[in-house]
Length: 470
Image 1: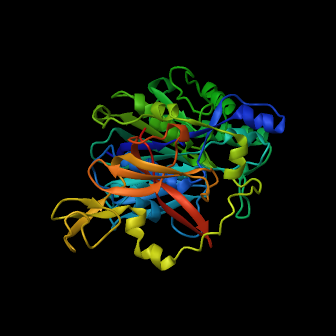
Image 2: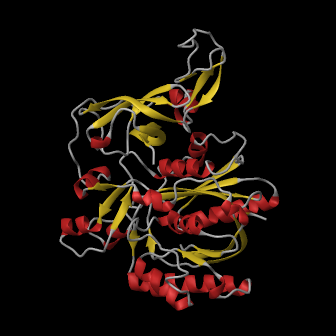
Image 3: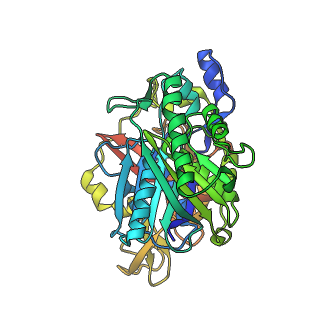
């Protein structure tokens, strides 16, 4: 039996009110707000966060990682390898990027299913993340949100089996983006929805049910992508699904359309509340559709407790449109006048990749003290060259001390530098992110999060920062 073994999600902490967007341009406002990735986040870092969340719920070892996105930080460089390194997967692991389509995540799931069924892999971690940009003062500027999801696909201790699938493709220009485009292009919405989205989704979902002898009433939850809330409701009505009892909340009013991650984010929310025996329908869209039948197993009751989608939605900070403009480089804004950072050293990035990306330090074999960064002499007992590897990225701690840096090179001044004492020993000096500066205090529980540090010479430097524990 192949299916979902564990699940993870990342919803950025910042929320931008759609009223604020409308007030900026003097237009109409859609209700609610949308999740906005921080200035130090991109699709890669969000995928790492979702992957780490997913891995906490299962002790099974992964031997593959697939990354799905339409907003990769690189057009030529495999990003799945960076995510796998940060998540500390075994070096003998299969990695692949799936991109250029809103269906990329379900394409990755289909490939993971095939790999597990064939025996070429035991567990594949499928990650999906997007930060799609829309033109300022456009309808989609209010609709698009940011987020990431991770699903472990395997055959042991499955919480939801994948019983069948149905896929179709469809050639149409509804939304697209070229290599030169920063924002999503689109044609006439009415044409795209009546000739593309609605008939394609109806065909795929009906085809899935016919193939497996199922009716709308057989599903406890129905999860599917839609470009917006209106089309989401229209599709449910046309197929005979009960919008209140069966259709999963698309989260559009509180998160937005998260692109590649959208349908999987709804699926994670559905699994948070699922019971053994429930059947779930999952369908994606993007030049066609992939549809799946899932059956929730008894293992759903055994999954490790952790923050659910509702908990992550509750943790949020307001974001002004003015700050959003600066974070997304929508217009030039003068920053702190300090010398620019030098280009990163490629040999140094290669040499220190395990310590920087996976946050590995050492633990003294003589006195048992964890230490970061890697050293030859123990800071406590002075033992020399007698250490074992020790990972800090999954450890929690408390804020020992901090300083407010008003000259920091950051799009969101002031910066916060902190010293974190880990609960199991060890200490790190790092930036603090995702917090209200008024709530920062000594002793604040902290965890590590993978973030962008700066970009130079076409290279994005990544490292770990501290953030308050959810």
